[in-house]
Figure 1 (cartoon, rainbow, N blue to C red):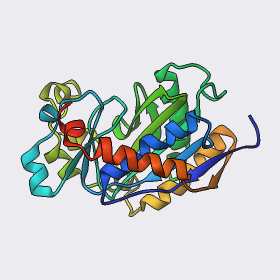
Figure 2 (figure 1 turned 90 degrees about the horizontal axis):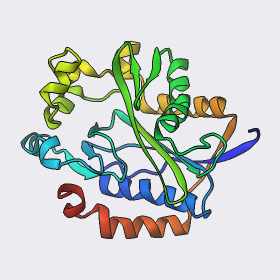
Figure 3 (figure 1 turned 180 degrees about the horizontal axis):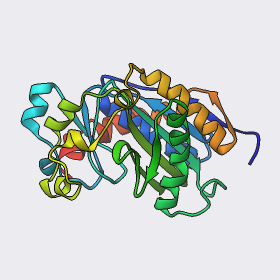
Amino acid sequence: MTGETWRLVDVEYRDDPFMNMSVEEAIPRSVGEGKAPNTVRFWHNSNTIVLGCFQSAELEVNFDACKETGTEVVRRFTGGGAVYHDGGNLNYAISLKKGHPLVPDNDLQSIFRRLSEGAVKGLKTLGVNAEFQPINDIQVDGKKVSGAAGSVRWGTVFHHGCILVASDLSILGKVLNVPKVKLADRHVSSVQKRVTTVRDELRKEVTTHDVRDAIVRGIENSYNVRLAEGQLTKDELSSVKELYDNKYSSSKWNLER
């Protein structure tokens, strides 16, 4: 593939994770319907736990710690595990029309691998020794720096990930309940020891904007595409409002699955 242009959107509601999740769903729906081009989105949340679609909030979340730290809880439409977001965490999402030659089949494992390549290449250009680790992680020397989730639905191949750039790992360790068996499997005693940040790996201050720009270049080089700045369409904005009002602002969706 040569000369293809994808839309690049930096649309975020940093202090409203429920609106962020509404945007996250509205874009792939629009791409699948042919109402919007293939799209890459970058965004941030303030202190938030993002649950996988099928997870139990009661099992995954330390609600006392969330209250203490002002951490919100929202559920995404994709599967996978719970993650912690704050201002030092960069989120990215790729929405491609189903059947795109980059991901010709519907196997999520191959989608994770292929659509993580841009992020891996971008991190490498910054000097981070990043590599994809199945099922859906990007790791640095065995420590997780990014996780991903995705889906093939609504006529769209969708992949999104969160990159720990300069996150507060001490809060992450408080608000998420990590099963002791999972920690034992990795021979570590705390969640902080299982993860790392771009800042810690580079041993210098780095901004999420620095990482965002590196991943833009990584995506363009990995997939031979051009990312062009764009905005959400009127249809997408209407869909965002509907999803917010009827789904993502609801405690039933976020907490009672």
